[in-house]
Image (cartoon, rainbow, N blue to C red; front, side):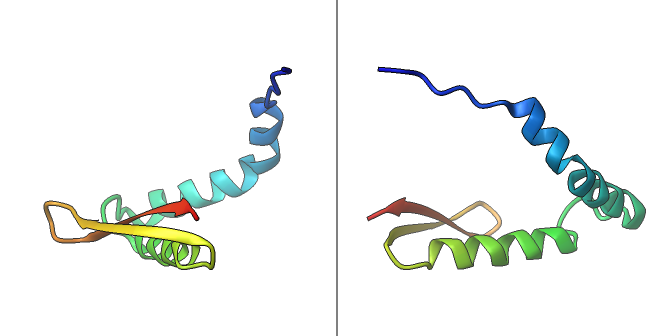
Length: 73
């Protein structure tokens, strides 16, 4: 059995400009909690977990927001 290693440094260098741009966007508007990026992430996660072939479980956190866990069916 062989173990595959991921080159995280190379992957990060490829993604660094996009990551830095998003971080600077948050720093610029100053909404560190519940800013527009949160809504965007929630929408992307909702689309991901509702894709065909996934089983979903949902639960509410203490603030009443719904979290979903997705498992391959």
